[in-house]
Length: 247
Image 1 (tube, rainbow, N blue to C red):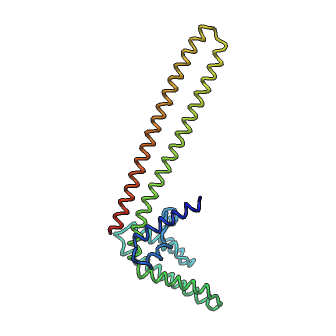
Image 2 (cartoon, rainbow, N blue to C red):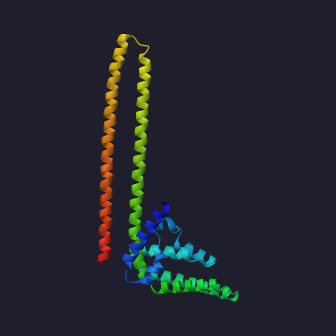
Image 3 (cartoon, rainbow, N blue to C red):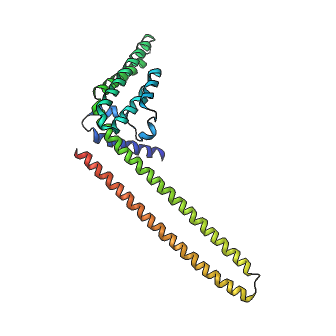
């Protein structure tokens, strides 16, 4: 079940990327391993400058590159600056990777050397196609952030619905306990008191039933509103999809 769910997510992401770069296989291949379904969860919250400093010490520039691409996607007016940042990170990554490749080649680790060679090729591609990468990443991440927002709201509605259901069950349980308590209390009453208590109890039962019906109607209204919200969100997704295909 989980595997099928993950496969559907991958298909959805792949479909979106193919829409954004339909005739550019190299760009698609690069971005398919560079962009994230949920960037808010996957990309570091640290400042880009801090990530770059850490990368220069560790030799791992991937977190800084991810951050730069994401920030560039969110700040279109600063695109030229981010192109230079990404190209600079690519150059640093290439330099660090070339040094590592020389070392493993001397040790005879050919597979590792080949892997590092592919990394250099990817970073060269990123430097040369930085503007195209940012353009596609911007549209990809804008869509993903909208989807993340939809998921958050959907989960919030689910939580609210569950809490309401639990509250309703607790209320019904308390009302039932009250009825049982009053029933026991009537057993020790005289005829006149008992008749009056039964009359009051029937009135309370009618009121409880009216409250239950009101809660049921309120729940139906909430479910209707939720369906309407989900239909609107679906319509907006389809509209964005048509717009992407038209561009």
